[in-house]
Length: 249
Image 1 (cartoon, rainbow, N blue to C red):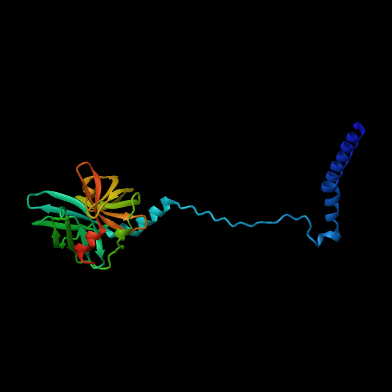
Image 2: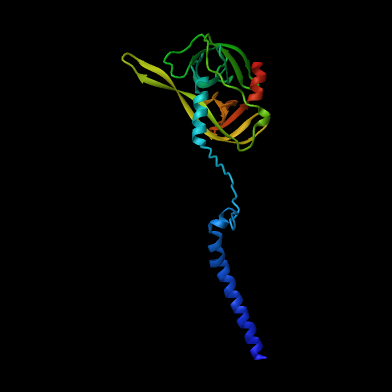
């Protein structure tokens, strides 16, 4: 009985050693011979997977969008009869000098001047075509042609958490040889849409009241609306749907 078991073990060991030898030495040796090469024996299948990795550089996208829209933003200075000086921004909506801004920036019985980006000279012939006190919008005309405009966004496609930015105008005083010279400079801020409805878009952006009337854009440079600034400095935006209804296009 013991001899039979020992024979079985010896046979098993011999078979195992033979299998290892054939698999690791004998068979590889022969498949590498010229006779077998044409049959491509023992070649593992090759799987080709094409992987494309696209990295969106948001900072570059934002910079490109700013460059696209910055010349469509104008500065507004208003002097009321009581001597109050109001500063704000507006948006060029037609290349022949049509501008939309907040009614609070262009009140009745006030003198209005418009400043284009980089300009050191005001346009003083601005006329208010109409006001909507309820929705706080004003439509202005200046005698200027070939101005830069941008497209409006589709209000129905606005999303929560969407990345947005504003471009506004700040007024600066440069010391000239005889008297101070006023120049205008663009200022930018960015954030996201927290929530919105048909009347207002609410963002997480905070700004100074001098940027009232500045436009809000999506990351592709389309106009989402015109900005209001509350007492806490929060940016709230009159949506593009209301603006288009107001100006008629």
